[in-house]
Length: 182
Image 1: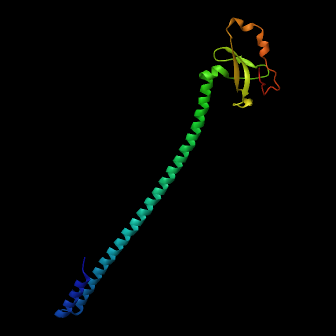
Image 2: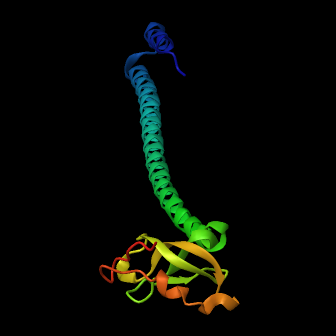
Image 3: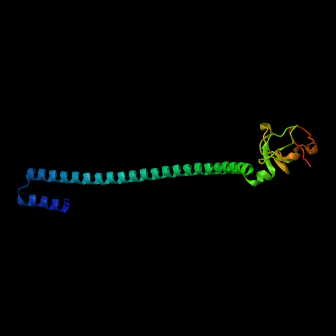
């Protein structure tokens, strides 16, 4: 970079040598103009770099905010899905337990409960009386989960038709709500 004191010294040397005049002044002015244009260019370059750096920082900040917003939205959707998945897993777990594990065989059955049907058969063909109705499924679907009182008789046993079945029928107050059998 050109030092301005050197230019001043050069100008004085032109005047002192007697070579001055208009030519020296023209050279001096052109040199000063070149130096000033160089300085302006350097200043403009530094301004552009500063502006570019600020723009880069602004773009990076906007990208970070956008990324944070996407991450937050993704996390919220994942949390909602996890909550829903937990509910779905609980429903399937309940259905699995009712259908396949021992508690189903010892007291729960899924079936239609109507005015003319108050007893039934469990998974092992054991005769069962309705003890209590749990309306876990809406009655409009006609599928209700009912608690059963399971007897030792089976559908295949010889003592099935012993006349005791008529004692197990329930008296219903209405078709939509079974009463408790004793």
